[in-house]
Image 1 (cartoon, rainbow, N blue to C red):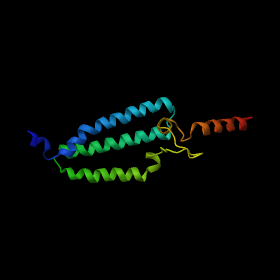
Image 2 (tube, rainbow, N blue to C red):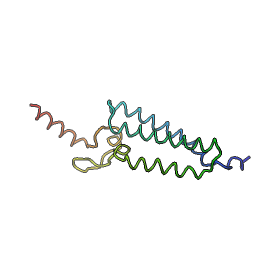
Image 3 (cartoon, rainbow, N blue to C red):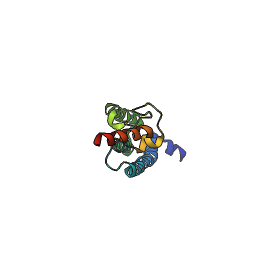
Image 4 (tube, rainbow, N blue to C red):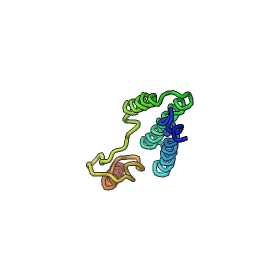
Length: 135
């Protein structure tokens, strides 16, 4: 029985068992972002793009597992999705750990759940400048 489990499509089987949970986590995180980023910001779209990429990888693993192809075909599928993500790097990874204005390190809350990559003091300063410009 254990040999059947380790059999021909072990890695495709593991991708089919583990990655849907990862995909679910990314989609739940996207819904959490909806509370903090009301309109479709770059960061929220990025998590959606990441979820679509994970779903594509799960689909590749499904076809490999269903048609009993070799697990080695997961590598070109993964590399194709990875190269696509690198090619669209601005869309997939808009997250920055440093403030765009002063270079100060940002908290994970600001990095993932705020529309801009700006720390609180710079954000307050920017809003004050906007108020002065409106007058």
